[in-house]
Length: 396
Image (cartoon, rainbow, N blue to C red; front, side, top):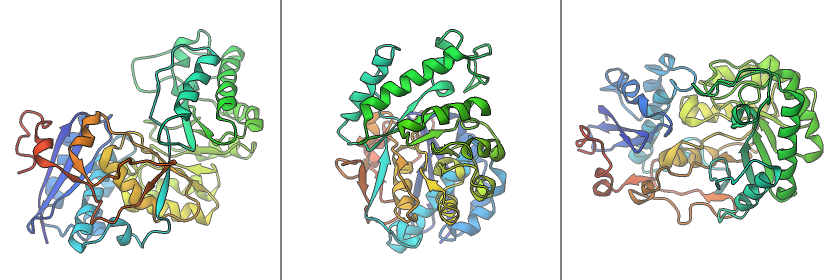
């Protein structure tokens, strides 16, 4: 079997990857829906994989893996890797999880990081009301993650939130020390949300990037009585092309609140310090950024050896990213907590694919399916109407 083409289009705002072969077996994958600009980066790798056997996933990846980088640039490589696994599974007549060593669980837990209800104001009561509505969602999420601090509008909407000049010109630009007013504003809203969650729904908090070590440590210690599920990306995170494990270690070593990071990190090698030094309690690689399914699997195994938990990121990964997460998380050791559920955006995505369970999430879990490959396929005629001008031959 040989690769005959690598195609990429943008459907909605998701770059969609298609790898074709001389045996008529295709593989599909998606890039996060926040990265519609990555189509040319995917196609950059076309000539480097043509003629290769897609079933030799690692051999193909050795040709391109070193040319990726931290979020967002590793996404193109990641999508190609996932499409290769889709082909390998289809060619073998097996679900991808069997190619990864087999599943250890029949269903995988997901958490809510993106199914949102519009908040009607900014008082603690408004934050509590929003949390109550999310808690009642039909998916029955057992963990809900909410953006706060520098991963929210607080730096730009709360006057004097931190010692810095708010900047709205780029992604997550704000960084600095919190004022007493800002810290109290943050803590009051966390307390209000946790009161709603009680002890039957875990509350996770996405906090940055942008917090200083001193504030990160202070916040982690302040919320210890609340038993927060985790504090995520306080120091680094979205679109920061570095790790800073030693800074995280200063926080983790001085609190019982679980500390989490890792969504922007590309490749297994860049997780070594975080895990081996136990700089965090939980890592959250995203299969659409780390380099794909195999990279995520390796990190999970390595983390388990060091007592570090796994809660993979995935909020923007789309339908095919969801499928990849289901398969790889079914194979992870007991350090797996849950992965972030990627709801389809726009919702018409649900009308152009087959293979998803209905409903997808029940009681905060997704049943692992047994269809070959990633197990999700396009309804081609339905999907064609969402192809942009110039890409009408994407499915040909």
